[in-house]
Image (cartoon, rainbow, N blue to C red):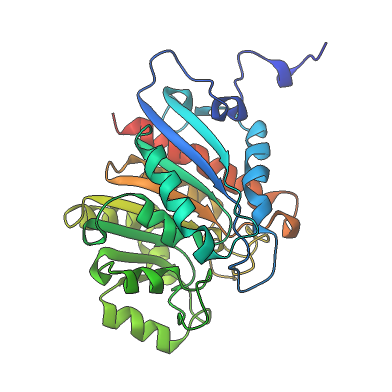
Length: 306
């Protein structure tokens, strides 16, 4: 018989919560879908392994948020598993992601998408089922993701693709943009489109969570539904070795946790994704554990909505 903390019934584990363990009358519902996309990546890697790695990592966490004194089991989680898109190019998986999300959102108050690379964001925004002119997009990312579309859809151009699809630039906020990780030409694309850009330096000065809360408040006045895209390369390279795009000068894990919790607390935020984790590049599971705790912080934010 297993003894100790591992089997302590008074120390509920987060993986059990994701599997459906919640209180008798939950205050909110969260749908989870794994999107193991990797063929749209500019840099070769195994982001397709991330959804399963994140689920495994949740076993190491409890369900209690000591900051807000809430238990995420107040949120009922429904994990629909992974879509079979690992061998699909982004344009091939677009309809499947969109249709699956649209169905799932009928049963959940909010959705969490476990990527996969950042190419899933375009389909994710469409999957909210709201006209693009009424959608908002907030990205936590070191990069603009505004690369040209001539070579097809990739993890480097989901925002450019959404602009081409009809998402107004003034409905987009990009937080965490890093110097020496982008080009002047794509910065000009962002300016011309009317995208609200907050550099990493600006967010460091104001505080990441405060910046996210303020920018979400601005979007709420303009749109009906908000999608939050969390590219883990917004973290400093020291904290995120498993994201190919992370650079020195990014954010600490505690800052991202606060920001994700703030996103979860915003009622207009209906979908959040976690992308660009390659477990094969990780060191001591540092990035994978960060992704897992972001799942819990988002759920904590949902509890605050009541």
